[in-house]
Image (cartoon, rainbow, N blue to C red):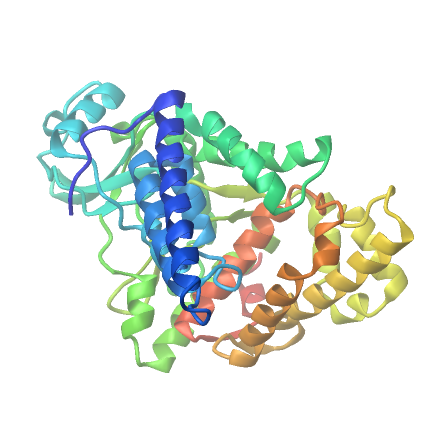
Length: 436
């Protein structure tokens, strides 16, 4: 794969790259409508593919939060055309890496020494490049290590990147007024945390130790003396990325074993620790030869405050969803319904969230749940399509829900997608066996 010798870090350089991408997209639409003039049955597939290619090509050279957004979007399988999902999923663990000279320069800047001065062996070629950093193999004192290096300028460009994205997101989600600022602040805060590798090592050690007793779950050890604000050194863990394992695996017992470990890991964090690994994409998990799940990235950890946790999980119970008075009371607590809503808005959003919660909480209403069940996934897709085309929804204030929904919903949707990829059948309450 071609390497990158420099990354635009200034606001002007990054903005101009996005403008270039916009010009390419304009050209794609022009070509599409020109062809459609002669062929009325032409589908949007070619346009979607061209746009996905050009957007990804533009973002991959910027790295950082711009590429992180693409990675997050790749998990929204029911909301985006397949061309975007396929292309953006490359942002999870397969983007052009930094060149060897830039790696050495970056390492010296962040750690005060070149790699060969700190390790007995260090491979200059990256084995895994993602949105915020890339991973290299190393050895020291006979131990095989993985060294994660953050891309130059990532932390400094987050605020300006989000400022460029904000007008587009505001239009897409119909956000209105000052209240929308809380959502952007939440995203900015989490992205800044992901660039703080000292914090990530701390979080990694704490959650690894807290979850070590869960069966079929493994974690690397972290080495603080070989880590810094932009460098992390940990054990090298052998295994396949979860998506690769899911594609190749034909053994249902193994799929269920991995899926159960994944489910127990997330439910234990959510209900026991009240904080959760909020970046559940395939690049953050490996599966070893014995079908153990290995969690390897703890950059994005979301705290779950009690005043959100309680009403959120109260609405996971079917009897509460079907109690209209209680249901609406919790919607107000969760900021889904607002005091300034009209009767029409209250009625509309109550019905919308009743349908959504009935569907999304259905795994919690059973003792076992089969994530390979296509009826469940087809229902999610149908509901997404229904409301994406609803002109009534576009007229209403889109500021719906506590800021905590952003990462908690992302966590559950990502978890469901991983379990669907695995085609795993899980025991819903098994995690309670490991609660102290």
